[in-house]
Image 1: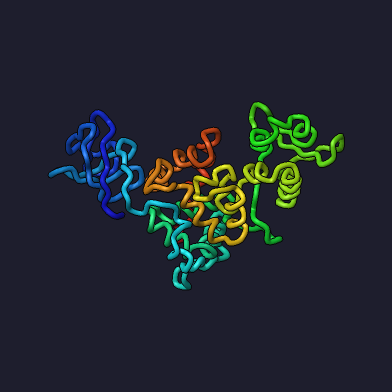
Image 2: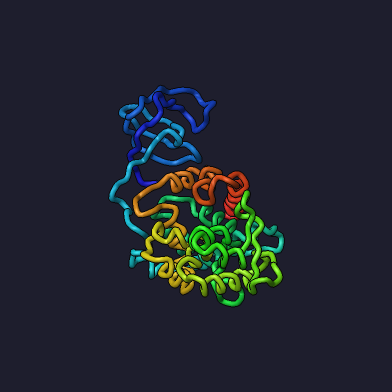
Length: 315
């Protein structure tokens, strides 16, 4: 990785010979010490502090913002020319012996690896980590068989964005579990009609979403997760779009902008973020806490780890 400067946040930070808490101690660094970050090794940084060098745990080093690579990636014209797929030499030949995890990781790379590789170099993330996130979020796909973007309509989010001011109308058509809001989603298209469970297929997602758009389009778009990275519409400003509709139209128009959107969401408009640093250090539970929320962070983190290891094995 390119050399960066970090600041020690622990009162006393151990400097070790190897990237392990059991490795021999080379010295300590005081809070506020500025260090040069030479490379990343999992959750550890190899650093230089004056005449001392060694490994420190990344949880106790903050990387301040700089001007390098600041701004949203979707504003960069050079990324428009980067091939979406990898070169023939970088394409992974899928073998009959591959298990399901390996096959999905390879398919995701083979359709998006050219752009994934370029973006990973810009933000200094292992491309295997980006592949793993896409595999977990959407099985590596940005569009369904019918050509429409992969979406998930979240009833509880639509309640927050629209239903609180239209409770009777909302309750006539949408349900969710009040205790675990991501569960128990049901839809009834005709008031007084039969209720059906949500999230059974993409056709169902688009049917519910389409109905919600007739009630309030902007709120409906805010209430869906979109494309390969499954970013919620209400996060449009975090990926560089002025409106939910602007994000929706661009994601629906081209898989390229879904892939770029993943990296913009992870990085933000600056040069780094806690989510990016967690992904760089392969702290997948921490990453999932920021990306998916704390409720199921361990489950998501474990799945990301599985796909990461599968893709690393293929490479």
